[in-house]
Image 1: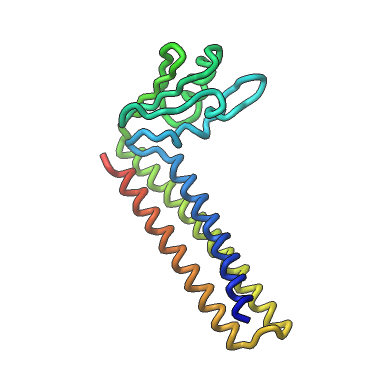
Image 2: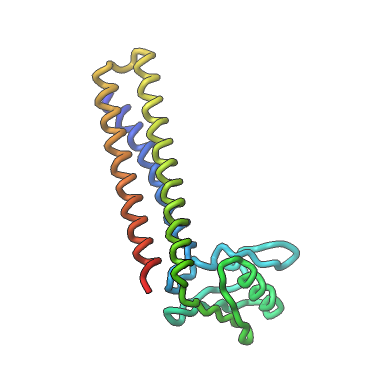
Amino acid sequence: MAADQKTLLDDLTRRMDGALESLRRDFAGLRSGRASPALIEPVRVEAYGGEVPLTQVGSIAVPEARMLTVQVWDRSLVGAVERAIRDSGLGLNPAADGQTVRVPIPQLTEERRGELARTAGKYSENAKIAVRGVRRDGMDQTKAQEKKGDISQDDVKVWSDAIQKLTDQYVKRIDEMLAEKEREIKQV
């Protein structure tokens, strides 16, 4: 029985880790006052007859705290990269300089900081929903095993408590990540 519980908890842990990783990616795309390559990595550029990720047409660097640069490998794509960043909805105004596109990161207004904090809150709530969904799946599996007669009611209680404890740990981590991101966003 203990092996089944360990297998179940390992599976639930793996799935909850996936929710945390997704939240990390979402948070990386939120703009704070500092320059981060993750800010523009998701930008897609019209190139070679289709849309490709920015990272496939150039390399992104952070030469200073409030500046990103994109070293475009194909000179003919400099304009497309500049346009893609400008049209990305991130509020950035890139400038071409030879084969390099400079992207200054402007100061965030107080209003924009509030919007970003709310967006971060939505992302964290989505992660919590995902974690709770994983918990529900674990509880359902436990109850199904009880119905089949594989485990006793006492085991169901033990397993349910373990699943709930795991869920609480992940929700706490999500809250900590949100608090850190909000601190980063509000930092002037």
